[in-house]
Image (cartoon, rainbow, N blue to C red):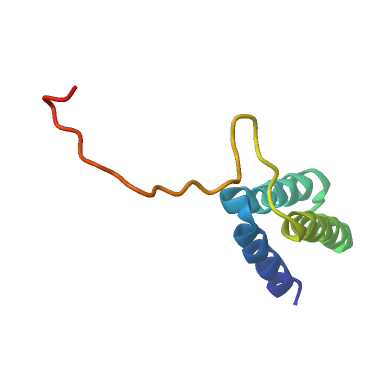
Amino acid sequence: MLLVLEIWLTVKAWRAGWRGWALVPWAVGLVAVVALAGIGGDPTSAEDGSIVMSLFVDLALIATLAVMSRGRRPAAAGESHATLEITSQRAVDAAEL
């Protein structure tokens, strides 16, 4: 059920203007789960620790995507969210240059 929520929030963040940045929390979460499983994954112990770690990373992913999907992505330096509209366009001949 959490996967459905995560996918929905990712789509919502993508449409809010984050585009490819909406996939970054997924990549960070995947790397974190693999790293934490490698560090805390003792083959002789129960898997309770791994489940708790993956649940923590999962909730962090949901929180990050929820914040991203609430509003539009802030404009970076030199970037604007304003839409440019071209009203007329004429071909430039090589002779005019």
